[in-house]
Length: 390
Ligand code: AMP
Image (cartoon, rainbow, N blue to C red; front, top):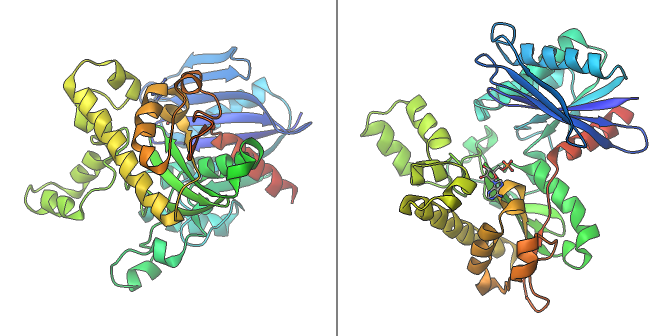
């Protein structure tokens, strides 16, 4: 049985999913190697939830991402002797040039390495498993799928910062991220909500990373994320939009180093920084601490503000779609956010919201409220299949 492997590599974990190709793409298993270099742990579950692997490993045997990739590859070959038809990778940055997924070769890899300065925390991790596979399985086609591509059609007006023009040419521009998630949701809308799919829609990807995307007739025209995945909404640990003067103040007046500021705004801010308790919305919802409630109030407030901004980019709004961990699973957060959208015509139906139905607005709501689970890995598998068959 031919399979496609989907890889999503982070700083200390390597997530993967396996899809069979025969009879259409279907998920066989999902797994991850966590604690790379410290306490490696491989967990894999089948599509039915059955545990296929739950193994701890010696940190010396899995010191880095290439080693983790090789380990996962060896495990897969043992478990699944079928043919590996292709590997699809989530790559955060496609830079100014890559407007769609691409088959990887040395030239493309060299380009993607040039984008490391644009996403220094993520891009090197995304590229490491590609190199590892090329070393041992050069025969297997690999595909890079970018978080930026779906936003490629934004107007120049939307994508510029008001700084001297030459910076734009050098790549300092608003890219937008979470594109694979938005592409998947946009692809589902014609089937799930045909009467609004051609209209003005905001999709809210609310997970540990969070952003909003404005869709006009299914195409992204605006995003709350910009040059990096720091902009827009506050997130689990990232600050979201912040006056650049704050960064100058931290560097200049507080004497913080660039690395300290980077750590602060990527890892210690957002819900975690504001609450001082957790980056996890579930924990904050259960906490009786005022700071937990305050962090959630701020999060919801900023989503409302940013929704107004994106509604302005669309010239009005027909539907608002919730997706990702918080958007798909928390009726409480959806209700709070929907209350902020009442001025745009939103009327929440509490029963459908509690059930997590596809449509959670009342029949007479001027703004349609929807819940559409995202599937970035399936999106990557689809792109990979279409490119290796092309
Ligand atoms: P994601 O990045 O899409 O996997 O989303 C992860 C985040 O979703 C977690 O950090 C949680 O804050 C949030 N989450 C998952 N399930 C729930 C839930 N039932 N209620 C509230 N938040 C949730």
